[in-house]
Length: 245
Length: 321
Image (cartoon, rainbow over all chains, first blue to last red; front, side, top):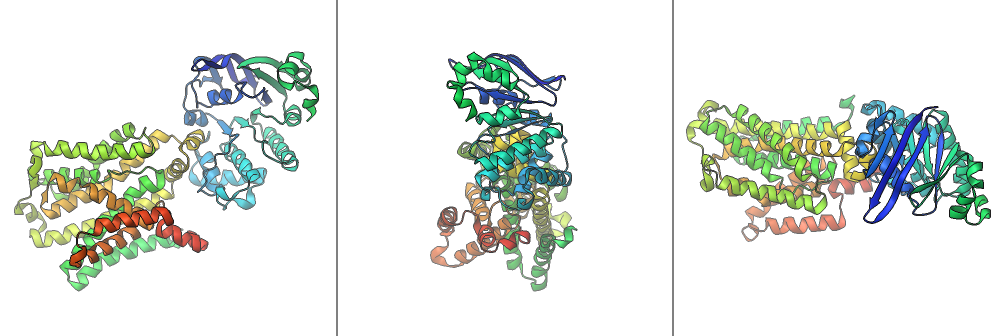
């Protein structure tokens, strides 16, 4: 499998703080890659660098064969990169349908309004939002808003989906359903880069895992390998029993 | 398909009433007050594209109206162009200028953008005041000959009135068409949350510059027609910040972001202003009332009249957009 996204020697500093330092890793076409690490390890900064919220100070970010480091968020979105946020950002005054249609119309396929609405209906079916398309985004529950975040990103028919803690704040039942949804998305051929704190979920979802600590890559490998890596246990898991939590 | 929705019918009905009522009554006074209403509806509807759709409060919106007036009157008076051509040219020039300005000042957000738009209006007012080809502080006076091609002053006033009604109708059509387009969807997304919109792929700088430019076109044409009709244009009257603020009151009163709201607000405001002017005690009271009105709306009914209707009769959303 070839790399869809490749970061090479990427660095980003905020004042004196190195948020990401000389980081290199690749996301292969079709895989689910988990990005884990303790708080402040630089996971969200990596997402912000990839989808254009920040420009890297050094290094290159190549997506689908082209350099995207320093491109703006809407330019990156057009190339087929979509993101679901940790802190949901619904367009509150707009309907669920319109929220997702924005994603569809301004995403990779540059759909017309009518085509976009059609694409959204398919996605809503998959995500389980079909019955709520006419509701205002602000009226959804927390779990509903998380789904909307995901549906909106997916409506863009992206090649790569960035999922930033989409399970946070959900109860165990909702987590189970969300994991099913994420698996279905992958089956449709979407490559996924996911940040997650719910350990059991990310261990079972991911094909491979990259561990960050203080902005650097600490380890990379299959979930089982990473979980057994003593450095990772020391830096991140601390108490090995935590991994099963 | 589109004719199943009530809005196109309402535009047609309103336009027909504007055309027929003063003709039927043969009343110049009625025509004059409807002319003002048509100008207000044009200003409010186009301002709504900025405030209601994109979420950017353009405090200096009147600069389009004034500048359009100047270009048009100048072309008619000094270049002997015909009125329609002059008004259209004024609209295109002002629209192009707005696009360039927009790329610059639309980097600002919230209060800073609002301040910058006031700055643009004041700067252009000062420039025009010192610009001798446009008559400097005294402005441009049209000679009576300027009305000759339209069959003399009396007939010209009627013709200009019908043109302004057409501009008003076009403004409403534009509001409707943009809201039901991809551009409109992108603008509404920007209005809700600009950062989220950009991450979803909306090309925010371009869309904002486009709407700023589009919202300048018809007000500039209207300004051209209006000041041609007045026969005189001078900086104080052309770049009057008061009218800018009144336009904001109209948008908020009717309901920003809706298609019909700003037009409704403009009509109500014109009615209120007309009534106050006829009562001697209140003849200079309209701005006080406008200010109070704005305060009350923002505090108690931020959605304006349309927002109020939508909240109490949710089914009305589908019909009264």
